[in-house]
Image 1 (cartoon, rainbow, N blue to C red):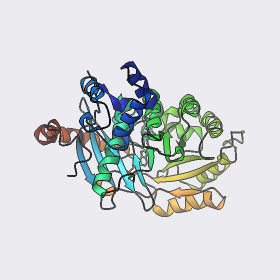
Image 2: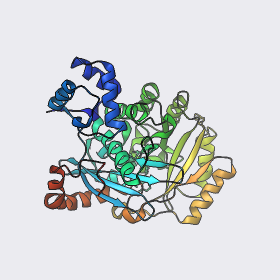
Image 3: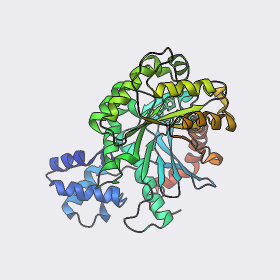
Length: 389
Ligand code: SAH
Ligand code: SF4
């Protein structure tokens, strides 16, 4: 089997090239061709020696993920469904905004954490994505969008990456870190550390490792101000209760590119959205647990996410005026609080809607793939991000 060059960060590629008897600067050239120019085949890498291209051709490839579908929302959101084999598919969502473009990237097919309000969690865990499969999502989306938007050389479509697609990134740590390094690498996508965000349900030891290995912006899915409620929503809380999670957040901030943690909070009607919950959250931000115990005090912002319903959840989205009132309690106390706009509703690209759709759509997509898509992939038509359909 040939090596997938998308599996390497720059250091990894340099080591691989050195083993081939090539100098480090060749790895830099190759990395730039792949990630900056979106090249997928070695023939077009004109400034690499013919002998190197021949070696690459024999031993390596840029293995993209087959695209099962591309959907475009009325608000400009784009959602891709990628085939990761074995009947599994993952989704990647591009969210355009006035001053920037954000890509929401998946880290696993399914998720083992099993949060009650998340359709990926209800799907169960299939498998970890490899580094190359995580990177392939940005590689494809960036170069596809550049071609579609007709951007000039050097202009980029995506300047923000959030690990908020399917899966728990900190339960796929070994694959995640080289992918993050590729996103940050100047010879790669050159994204700022402040604009790459890992979102986690709270895997405490891995938050500590991320701080050491590759500190980027951190979002923590909190969803409740006390352990009993959080356990019922995020089962991982039994292993890593809130006080420990806040401790990890405090330590993280010592190395983080931003001086606050973003707490995500999914608004569920009658479950975690009362005034009393908001006041308990305020006490949490002041370092006080529900029984008055001392908790680490973490500088933070809140991002309230109106729940995106899916049939099996049995949960209901908080009404709009409830979300506004909840946000006001936090804001009036000086805590920066935003309410996430629901984007891509018409194509089911909103937070937490990804997996149920995938399950259904994977089967539908498979049927479709057998008939139409796979022959196109085989013919190389869906592999190239730069061909504009
Ligand atoms: N596993 C990571 C990242 C992926 S989920 C995590 O849990 O943080 C990204 C965000 O979407 C999380 O904050 C998650 O709580 C939220 N989310 C999941 N399902 C949702 C739903 N149905 N409605 C709204 N937000 C949801
Ligand atoms: Fe997994 Fe995050 Fe969904 Fe929880 S919210 S099940 S951690 S993807």
